[in-house]
Image 1 (spheres, rainbow, N blue to C red):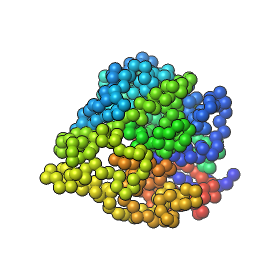
Image 2 (cartoon, one colour):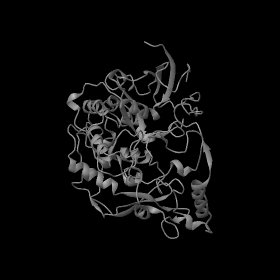
Image 3 (cartoon, one colour):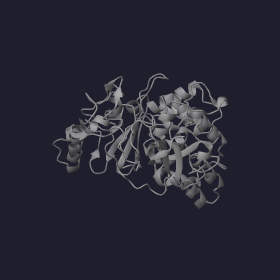
Image 4 (cartoon, rainbow, N blue to C red):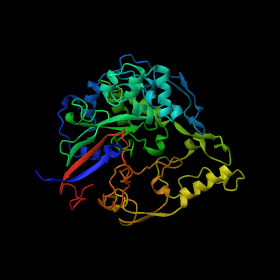
Length: 445
């Protein structure tokens, strides 16, 4: 066996992307009974662990509204966030998005709620915890706890809070993914704050590692995920792009997060996806500037729903909602207009970002005429019209969370050295020399 001389230390916030793309080239798991047609290659061991994880002892689901109005607002930290459905209001009874399709009492609405932008944040998680004494299915041991055994063993209110500290303090759900059998690295556990990485049942001994991520927004999806018939690719739906379509994501979320033993029907999948792709959400009112949607402004969810065509990158001027405030006497409105202009037009050079400066599609550089330094604006990457997400698929090595300041892989000339927070797991990836083409010399990272 080649000598392990290259050590790469990553915080788990970016680990899923590395696992996913390595997983796509081969997994050696014997989960034939779980290999339903259409499942992503990485998913059977995830589903197996979900099925083997404990269920909530006494689930107490929060109240689901009977109707989601066509247009409504919810208070947030700076004012009001609005949601709009162009097709009209939605009855929740019988709708797959609001129906428990698994075995732990969860629905999509459990984790994707309008006051959090159809996602989940710490303040919402804390409110739900307080209202249900920590018994809402949101805190199901499978991934609402820092590790399933911690959630299952928690009895007192304080124990439940400690077991779900990632969700309560950061809005993070546990994401657990398999280590590919043909991985070009060996993993060492440097820090395991919850005991999940070393767990014989849930951790590395079982071929699984865990990371903790924020719940993504189930809204504005036609602005950042192409809504086309499955199985056509739909861009980066997840943090790491591991799901190819919204339909696939809905199915796998039901089997994993909801711990279902059978997949939802095609009709249920279509109904759930139809609801979430029909949602548009945006800030509608700000306490300093007032309405964000009244002319000459063009913000808010109704205006967002009128933009088209969807999913087309607009790298030159992605935000145009507040051009009408260019001469506003209101200092805050004028400031927003200036910020919009800077976002769209301020030029700067980006170099040394793997997945950007060296991105090639079908032999052609994806972002420039040749690989190398690029002159860009904020809109180059944040190119989804009036949303600001990235409609162009693929990972970018921004160096934000990998603690790898010495990493010079590919076009990665610099990276940010951030001290990993003690509440996050820390792993080392030991790679044999020559196993990764980016590294020709022995380097310790």
